[in-house]
Amino acid sequence: MPATIRLPVSPLPFGDYATYSELTAADARDAWVVVSIYSSSHALVSTIPVYWTGTAWQQLSSPADIIGSMAPDGSSGLWADGIDINPGGFWLLYHFTGGHWTSGQTPPGVDSHSPTPLTRIPGTWSLWATGTAFNAKGNYGVILKYGP
Image (cartoon, rainbow, N blue to C red; front, side):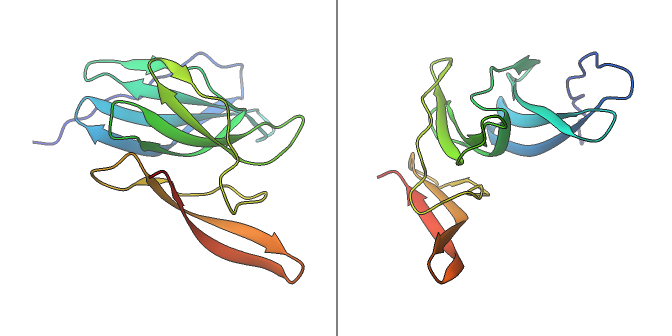
């Protein structure tokens, strides 16, 4: 029988609202969702990763202003890509393990677009992703592999 698990709701200023995306799971007790907070003028304010423990949602710190995509690492951790709004910059790849985020690393072959979606390669700690790269002739698509 299907079960319904309520998503976390935080108090927001009047007119602000939240959306939920990027659901990813390693198993029934390891799931993550990105909560995106928007102002009443529909501007994205921040994104917040939340973690399902099997019984309750926990809010995680966010490594960046905007989280683009997430994937479990196969070892109770999480990969995520993100970018800071101000100062703006490039999308970086972050790893959440042991309750902490690593410093952002530039994904290989990606310039300013999010490498999305991040997808764990089963049986490994590695990821597949798509991205957009640039050269003198313009934009072109790339498929990325990160990890061993």
